[in-house]
Amino acid sequence: MVWREKYQLSQDGWKFPGGFSPVQAGFQLCSEWAILDFHPGNRFPGSIHDSYRVTNSERENTRFERGSEVNDPAKNQAIIDELIKAYFMELETVLNYLANSVNLDGVRAEEIKKSLNADVTEELSHATQLANRIKTIDGVIPGSMQFDAVQATLQPPADTTDVVAVIKGVIDAEEAAIAQYEKIIRLSDGFDFVTQDMCITLLADEQQHRREFIGYLKEYEQV
Image (tube, rainbow, N blue to C red):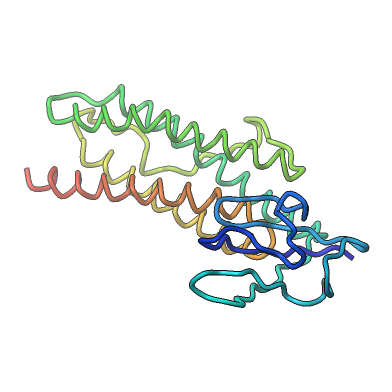
């Protein structure tokens, strides 16, 4: 029997029964959260079957709910599968952003080309983070033979001055990425807090990209 519990950092820092520190307690720190996997015999003062209390200067005796079972291979595999899907989405975005950043012609295209070129590096960074996480949770990063392209609206247009078509394709790609990260966040909730934290950060990046290109679309459609 193995289970996981999650605690939040208070303004006063971590305070556990018996004066244990996070390191002494065997906690894994993740941003403002601490995650602890309990095994038989891993005990603190009091019962490990009870919720622990963390001293907080603003809110005393706050209880934090226990997470899901850790030993759930099927759920872990489901998370890996969705991470792989997100990984391929990021790589396809890199291909199409790079192609469009080079192919577009005209004065009106220059700002979009610069933005896409900068985003290539960021999207590749996303793919790298996903690959590392897949490996960490015992998945295997697939090669190109398992890749299926899906970004139809982001293909380079026949008219290389059609900036609006590219902008719309970027928005479609960002919305698909947002939906995928939201799916992983929900799937990993209460089970894999590190994956969840990573995807929340990636989600914020994609939302920012979408907002940027929605702004471009408003401007370019008025011309």
